[in-house]
Amino acid sequence: MSPGEDPEDMVSIRVWVKQERVTSTQRRSLFAVNDVYQSLHEGKGPKTAGMLLVALIECVADRIGAFVDQIEEMDLEHKILSD
Image 1 (cartoon, rainbow, N blue to C red):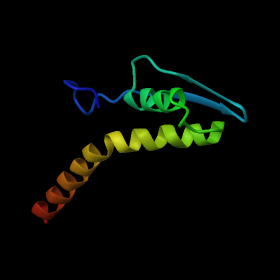
Image 2: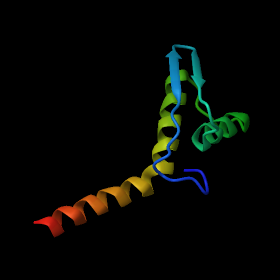
Image 3: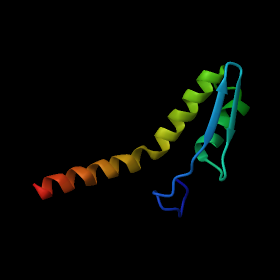
C-alpha cells in the first residue's frame, strides 16, 4: 500500500523457496520485503527459509489488512442493501 497509489494497484512478488535459500523477484519495491530485510539486517529476522516466507506473508497481510476489511464491509453493506 504505497502512499498515493490506488489500493487496487497491488504489486506482485514471486518467491522460490528451498530448504536453505529464498529467491524473490519484484518489479517495484514492496514495503513488506523491506520490513523483513530490515529485521534481518538488525539481527531480529527469521532464522530459516520457511520462517522467512512466513514473515513475508505476515508483513503483506498486516499491510493490506485494513484495505481487505474495507472491501469486506462494502460487500456486506451491498448485500444488506440489495436484500
